[in-house]
Amino acid sequence: MGTGRCQSMTGVTLTLFCGRVHAMEEQLRDQESRAEQRFQEELRKHQELLSKLEREKNGEIEMLTNR
Image (cartoon, rainbow, N blue to C red; front, side, top):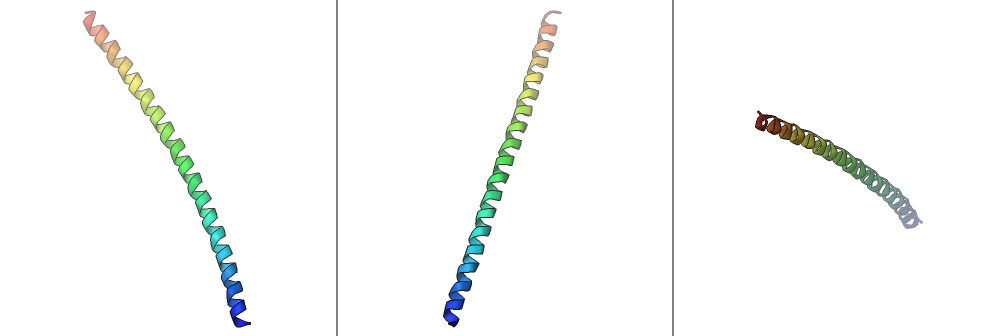
């Protein structure tokens, strides 16, 4: 009877452990998704700033060539 109880406890422990692993995997996927969203937002901001600087540069070049 002692061995059966140990096996039963091991099964419960394994079930709890597997549940925790699945929860952590889901948490990791959520964090990866949020990180990707933040990366895309920062990339968009960078591209917008680069475009703005390029327009300003072109405007200054045009102004200097028209003198």
